Length: 171
Image 1 (spheres, rainbow, N blue to C red):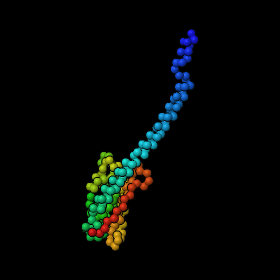
Image 2: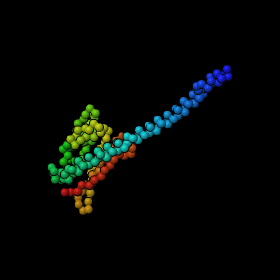
Image 3: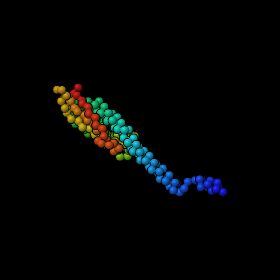
Image 4: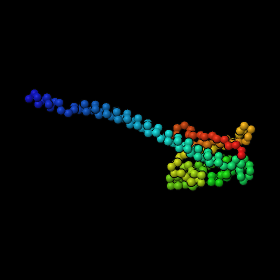
């Protein structure tokens, strides 16, 4: 009889052991969730940073590919065109509004919600990016030039986003 009582006493967990095990597992799980949440938040920023740099570079290349002087007037920073598809000189990019968009899409229903291609059409995968230009005349070692600065930001980026600078000399 002593043997059978001993077997019954050794079966299963006590209620106290079960509660302690649940509490310990809960603490471990909450630690994993906390770390995982932090990793997920920080994991998106490098991708947004990379997209912002690529976007800024593409807009900057487009602007620098335009004429130094306004082809219509021959002036440096002459009468600006108003829509991006008709920009024909570097200084026209000072007039860039709504990310250069001239149309909307179902993913970007508000004009300028997305970054847009050089034709003014929204790129649906580039939602919530904001693009601005600053263009100022400078002296480049005795030659006339323009300092072109582009700034790209996104709500998901910490800090001030991405800023690229370039110079364009007179041809």
